[in-house]
Image (tube, rainbow, N blue to C red):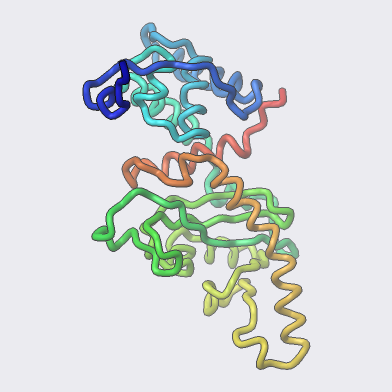
Length: 268
């Protein structure tokens, strides 16, 4: 007898769990489980069906693979609503450890330079949701400002704003411009940040019509700014941010969580 898959889905058939491998270090799962253990102990959290290690692993599966709560819940033997609560709890714990912009710039000052760029994290929205539609990228998403070190190491990710927000507007709103001006930090950025002034350095406009040294300056600028793309790439390596299906308010918490995971020291 042949049973079509559509029939199984519509009749609410049981999910079938299967073994899989997650591309994260074992030490990272342990580190998160210890943070979660401290969180539970401080708040005298009652018994949970999943231990701290399994709850940490559940959250990492959600972030790395972007599977639905029904799917990951079936794999861990819990319901969809329980999976949502467990993941949400871990996200709040990890997001609280994400550094702020001033912490990210600690130790930097006059003579140092950073790379600032904006990236779009795609979201699942209909065309009518205009505030989230980016004309530049021709898709719905959330604008995230990224501060990276000269070697491409991510230093800070801003909160997520609607996709149509201009990079310069977002940088000013997040206090990036003022913070860099106060510390006299040189900032390399693309043409979207032209007009910022302060310590921002952007490429020359219409450089092909300018003298040769202008063109060489733009090439040097692009070479030094290129490593900043690595920070955005590391952020989007987490599949949850390649096409988020959740509330736009929750994306900010997810970005802070990923920032914590990218920068935390769990080697000890």
